Length: 138
Image (tube, rainbow, N blue to C red):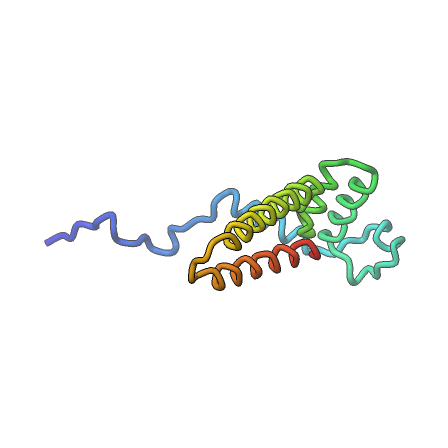
């Protein structure tokens, strides 16, 4: 009797070949990990034993950003995790102002009513106002 292999059976591990992109990624990481003997890094006071090609690439990105290249400024901010722009901040502050106005309107309506849940609602609104105040200080 011969057995038929089904598609659900896993392939042997030796059949798995790294993709071209995987090979490229691995190669780039190896190159970036190599020591960099660039005089520009030494001129910045970095000891040769502490420099690698990551540092060299970082220097190139920094220099382009410092020269005013907006694409490199954006890339630098992305790399270091500083992605909030002035527009984002203004938009967020405008949203906070809208939330504050809405909570004040709700507070005013609650002050006019005599529902038994008013105290709970007031606590909720005060908590929201406190949270939005905290956002301003960040």
